[in-house]
Image 1 (cartoon, rainbow, N blue to C red):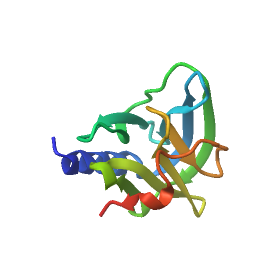
Image 2 (cartoon, helix red, strand yellow; image 1 turned 90 degrees about the horizontal axis):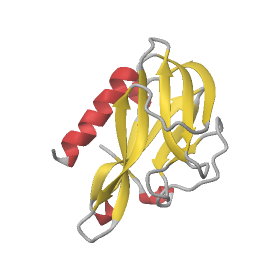
Image 3 (cartoon, one colour; image 1 turned 30 degrees about the vertical axis):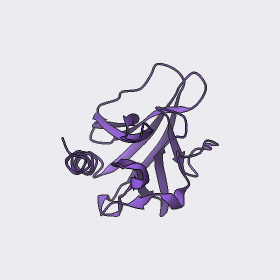
Image 4 (cartoon, rainbow, N blue to C red; image 1 turned 180 degrees about the horizontal axis):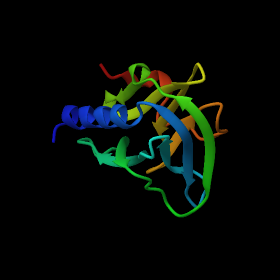
Length: 153
């Protein structure tokens, strides 16, 4: 499947599930306290999980890309639940890519809650995520500088 098709599928899946009242965010941490996955729990009972899958690129580099799965799919380690109880507006979703080394997959996702932007990016460590938000004190860094990411059209 081509990257454009995969990206469209991720966008459609997020928009279809994250269209309504968000009850909570569940942040699953790995054994070294990095974010393994983030689960969005909606008031409708639907859940969707964001995680980081690594891609092998042509020049022997590995880069992360966001993957989405329906349901709660987190590792059985530390879980931090953040009650939200606020509506999400899919029209304000922004998807980010980092095409410098040929990675055309979605590497970041920005959404708004309480009038503020919150972003999830693939982490600098393999298979991890970074949550840039005042809802959670994440000291880790995205895989690249934020200025290196482009918004997906």
